[in-house]
Length: 142
Image (cartoon, rainbow, N blue to C red; front, side, top):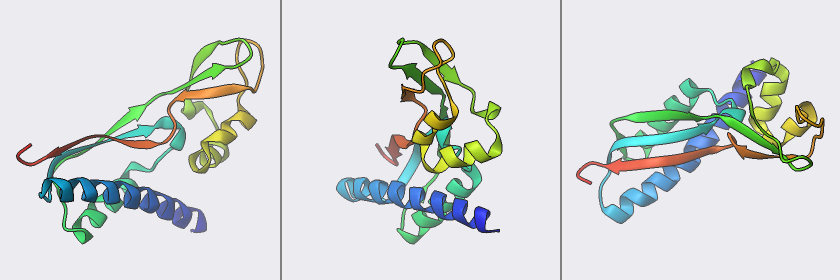
């Protein structure tokens, strides 16, 4: 139960940050109706979409925002070795549940569990697939 509660709180906190930003944009435009909100989810975050969607929609109501369409897009994980410059995609589903959970909260811990498939180095950068971002906000009438 504690694990589930922690995940709920994490997604809620992410939703709060997103809604805070969208609310500021809506104030600038003088509208409160969003016809489409597109959120990019880095696959390394292993975000629970259902919890995030619920959180966003509830926080939108609290903040007098109307979101007609909420769309999530996955961004694959791409890593680049700093030692040999090899670039590869990471299939997060191949990681066990404990590793996925650790990476969910702090994506940088992926260095602990992954090595460059070409040279074996743990010195790599996360090129794509980390974090959460607003990709598009379309206001009603925009």
